[in-house]
Amino acid sequence: MRRILLITSSPRSASYSTRVARSLAERLAAAHPKSVIMTRDLTRDPLPHIDDTFAIAREVPMDRLTSAQLSALRLSNALIEELLSASIIIVAAGMINFGIPSNLKAYIDYILRPRVTFRYTEKGPEGLVKGKKVYLVLARGGDYSGPHMQQLNFQDTYLRAALGFIGLTDIEIIALEGVSYGPEVAEKALAAAMEKVARIAA
Image 1: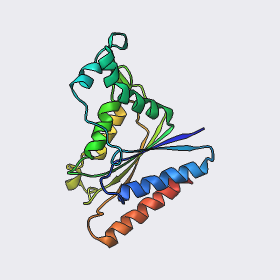
Image 2: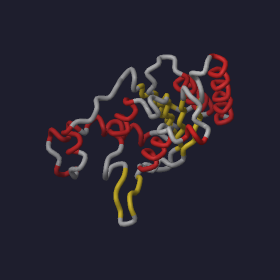
Image 3: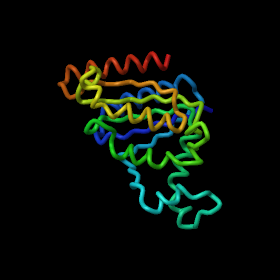
């Protein structure tokens, strides 16, 4: 059975990134009848931001955790288990102030765990989440494809770095540029993204 983890994060209920990501998940699932789509909607079901107890607990070896620290890690453990069970991961995000939505940042704070999803070795950090395909469906109000605007893009650059740190390096991006430039530009960007989705699913 192939599991597809769909993570959506846009504050807009009918966002372009969510629409394209859902289409991609459904097409990939249809291509493999035994596929299961697991949806984590970070807007409808937001995660609490990490706190002091969690920050300390994540550094403590498993055999030394107190009951309170174990409780603080419970949500993180569930999110990591969900992540590890997926063979395909689809992340949908709109650009917010040059970066990702805060709810998606909170999700990443929960899944980047020393000795669980990454470890430090004599050769440097090693990601422990491997062998998975990741699709980033990213919508941007402006056009960040040119060299001048690329320096302000902390959206896919951050996601590549954070996910790559835990071993998720097989990443493909579907970007919708300039969706705030008016209906004509937005529909053109949407059509191009859907064409890419069709090629991927095929």
